Image (cartoon, rainbow, N blue to C red):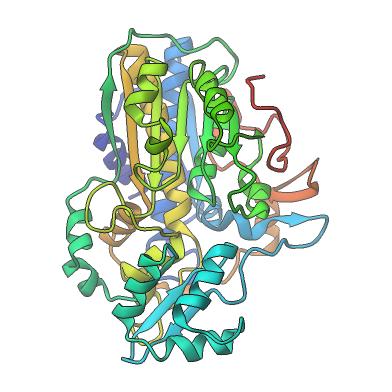
Length: 458
């Protein structure tokens, strides 16, 4: 099933099976972890597509494809990659204690995301909690009807979602809108002459990528590009909240720079970087960067032939397209969490599949668009969202997941891990999953904190 699903994904982008493709999957099938969702299938198929896209770029460079191998257990573990990070022998703190499920007055369940300080403060203020404790927040949420607090949280610019059944979500106006969208798509946004790939000994050597993303999906896409040779410059601003510990998972192979787009100097700096970039990935809500002068069409004017990648929570169409969201919220509103547990007691999945798979698909789309640039020219826009991934996972159907494991055996997990030393100290983290026959993936530099490097190309 993994191979056929891989080609289904590639088929959405116009890439058909080739006679010289070499794609192999190893190490069992679902369930890997305890879940009714086909997590191994979804993770391995998306990474298989990434591998074939890398092979295609290598073919364009050298005339020869590469063999691709995906370990299904490694692919599934990668969907919770951040949970395996150890810094100097300790696990970094990643979840705020207030984040989680809360019963409402009308017997529903609300999931609140409080990992960013302003979202935490907003949830407490909007709900009417008397103090910043889980007990006080639960008492406050219990005075609300579910739909009412969901709308109040969204209207207040904060993040949360009501746990729904699959049936309820499929009948929801946004669920109906998303059901009409493909898993991901590529749209031509400008003309440009065909351009060969830069020279180098890796598929993405010399490919310059601007990574303007936060949390997991977007940074994961940049990490995939970096581990295969791209020069990735991760751009953030000092005034924006960021979970620094996520860099210990997604920052490998990148440099991190500050740019403040509230300042004319910051805009000028980013424009200068764009003029020499190949890929521009952004993970803000649709239209956010456009207000700063960096809409995809404007980027194509600054750099004809650029590949723009847009990653968001709820997609580019539908009534919730401008709503803030994270993987945990999308799991709940789309019914994935209710199926993992029950509607009365929803449970989040044992992995953050929407985030990581969206990241893999974003990297996939970027590479397919690069191949189009070589063969056809043009500037391109790749679009993917967490909710589109959730719909895709749901479309794969369910299984009896009770035979899955809470964790991989220690001996097996140890083979999937690596260690590195850098500005964060001594890190333990997962190795790259996609195995290529000619150009093994690796990180050319260790992860670094935000703002460590200057805002310029190496």
